[in-house]
Image 1 (tube, rainbow, N blue to C red):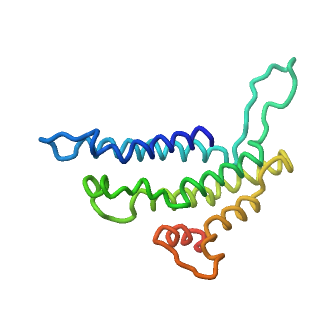
Image 2 (cartoon, rainbow, N blue to C red):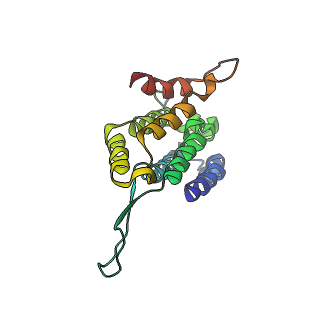
Image 3 (cartoon, one colour):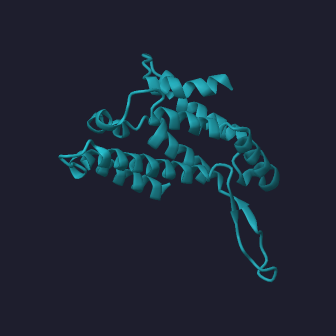
Length: 185
């Protein structure tokens, strides 16, 4: 999560500079469009790398003489850290990815946009039966060392619905979109 967070900080520094760095007087923003696509792809790679922690298993290549377990769960704390990463880097809408100086030159407005789509896909993946079954299998095999399904759902619910905790509720379109898949479960 640390490496992905550092990578995202780098992308946040790069994106606002792309119009100047890719400027070609006789072109129609082809370079900017390509580089913006690369930034989005790299951001998605970071999200997918972190996703592997949820319900994940560590494998240890050992000989029988060395002894010890071959498999262990990704520690519960690390899985909760992955959910915190999603909350900070994705569920709190990454407005920096929606830079109007870039979007208005290379993206046709249609819905859902990249951020909206990735937020909803991430929630759907976290609540997908394969993820929930992996968590359940982890608890069954490793006991309290693994993150239980209830722990994931409780943490995710608190993150997605956090905006409803105050006295004045004002949701943006991204928060509404993220709440819909959870409501439909």
